[in-house]
Amino acid sequence: MGAEVRESDGEYRNAVRLEVEALAEGLTRVLFGDYDAVLAARTADPLFGNLAMLGNVVINSARNALREQARLAVAERARALEFYVERERLQALLDATDDGVVFLDVAGRVRSCSEAFLRLSGLTRAQLDDCDAAELAARLETLRPDPPDTFRRALLPADPGSAGQLVLGCTLHWPQRTEIRVLSVRLGGAAGAEHGRAVSIRDVTLIEDSRRFREELIGNVAHDLRTPLTSMLGFLELLANDALGPLLDAQRPAIEVALRNTRRMSTLLNDLLDVDRIRSGVARAVRVDLARVVGEAVDTQRAAAAAKGLDLRCESPATLPVDSDAQLVAQIVINLVSNAVKFTDRGTVVVRVVAGDPIVVIEVEDSGIGIPEVATARIFERYYRSDEPARREPRGAGVGLSIVQRFVDMLGGHVDVRSELGRGSRFRVTLPRHRAR
Ligand code: ADP
Image (cartoon, rainbow, N blue to C red; front, side, top):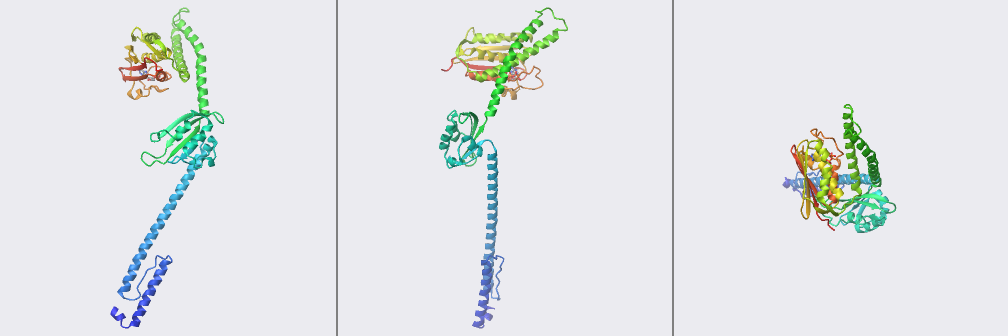
């Protein structure tokens, strides 16, 4: 066919011009953004046919690339918008909370903070701008924190790697007394890259004041109730023992119920007073005879053990001098032995004092109902009681063992329990024989 076109040079040049014009027109449309333009040869010359086909392939891939780029740009914009909205939401949330929150980047520079942080710290955004952790800690020290190194510890943890999260309590003394709780959290790390630290300051003055008020109230009420209760207990005991004349048969059960419940109330009050004592208590370390202290504490429980027909034994050396706090040790033994008596229906309760150096051991073992394994980890918590139906014993306040734990801690010792359901329990207290000076 090419041979026919080339019959005359004039005709051929004409045909070429036509083709070039057609190509130029198509390419111009593309140039102006019309990627739907299709190139077509005007003549039947395969050379131009192929050229148009190649041109269409190029236009097609350019169109696809542009569309993909546009799709990516839209997705990117949507992500940026989402990020912006999320940031706005977080900022709104931050500004709405009463917690003072500040974010530091990995280099320890302040990136952003909540309104409450400005309020609590008394600093301005300009002062915080690009401030680093050390500068910020120094600025916050003007609030006269106690302990004084609180902000330094929260903003510049000594071992940033291990201090994933840190909670510190502190009192600020300027411009007025404010109780705060400082939480310092490492951001990222572990699975992903670390990207800084968030530190929040919560004003807990009201909570702390009301806790203190509640505790003082409980302490005072328990104290004030003890005197009338002791007198009631004394008279009920006299009545029950016929010391004020013989009781009528109809009266005896009523007096016994009253006596039992008054004793129970007295135990609850004593527990509450112990809680009160713990708060302010500091253990003494004076030379005491542990054998005598334990023996006397065990004696206070003999009547209760005898009433249940239990064999209460105390195995101890004749004397055992230790440096300790007799009152705390006695209370530990009383709480453990009274529990042992309470939770044992038949058999024995044995108290052992084992001399050693540098530690001495006091064991209280019973043949009672035992403690379920799930409960053994929790019985030293305050207000914890194991509540299965098999336990028919009167409910206590659930503080006896938490007091034991606290007193043992105050004495620098250790307490643990081994128990088997239905066979009994053994509480083991180890105490230092000499107090560290
Ligand atoms: P509570 O005032 O209830 O006795 P405690 O703190 O003294 O509080 O004890 C917590 C719980 O531990 C008790 O409710 C009881 O379930 C369990 N417990 C303590 N001592 C014994 C024991 N010797 N035998 C069985 N259970 C015990």
